[in-house]
Amino acid sequence: MTEPSSRTIGNTGIELSSPWVFFAVTFAITWGFWVPAIIFDLAFDNVLGLALLLLGLLGPGLSGVVFMKHQYTESAQKDFWDRVTNIRRIGLQWYLAVFLYAPITFAIAAVIDIALGGTGYFVADWVSQLTTNPAAFLPTLLFSTLPPVLEELGWRGYALDQLQRTRTALAAGLLLGVVWAGWHLPLFLIEGTNQHDAVGFLTTQFWLFIIGVIALSVAFTWIHNGTGGSILASILLHSWTNFTLQTFEGTLRTDIIFYIGTLWAFVVLITVVYGAKTLERGGDVPHPSLKSDSGV
Image (tube, rainbow, N blue to C red; front, side, top):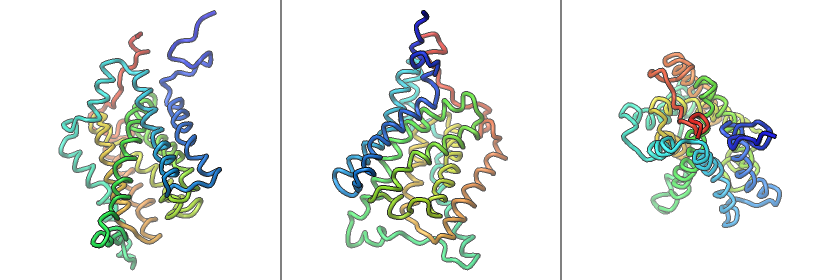
């Protein structure tokens, strides 16, 4: 009898390099900590709940690093960490894209809302509280720094490159966006999270969140490919987007304009300008070398 390859799961024929295996492991880790919080009615605004939240957040990054170590050649592994730490891999134009993407899309949505008689966006409560309570910045700081690092080592660091091996950049970005949005679902059912307390489950804002995350995923793909696969660029974009979302608030109409209007208009724009195949002018996308490809 032929022994199964070390790159497959048992006799199933499923390749370990398949992004679906990564997704399954990631969801198992994350939901393994978050679903019990739902079952036992634990909130994430206490020590135990916060521990479960943070352990769940490890899912994408931990899976990404483990799969990368198991699947990538030695040179690809070194390149992975260079893509995480090397600030010079991000050109000036892409730094501008990273830090202007969220403010510009927010500003356009606000201008449209004001033109329709609305109020646009206003500064969140935590900003006004800084004069009397400097610690009011801490939740935003945590939300804007830790999750992006823990998530992007997996989502764009590993999964996106695997998806793009057999799909166009646009299709890979959209598919990853659906998975990324679905990964958040338990948070809508757990007290102490922004998804539960400020959005709610199956509300209009819930669907706007899902739709928006999918659009964001395409923008992340554009910047990922444009920077030659810089994981640091995705971390910075994720962090700055989170910070912007936490700093400015708007009405339901403003959110509809933002999530359905400006974010998806941007998806259409970059698809038309750069093309669905790669979403970048160079005509190629990152394909880290796998041990199975080189016979290792």
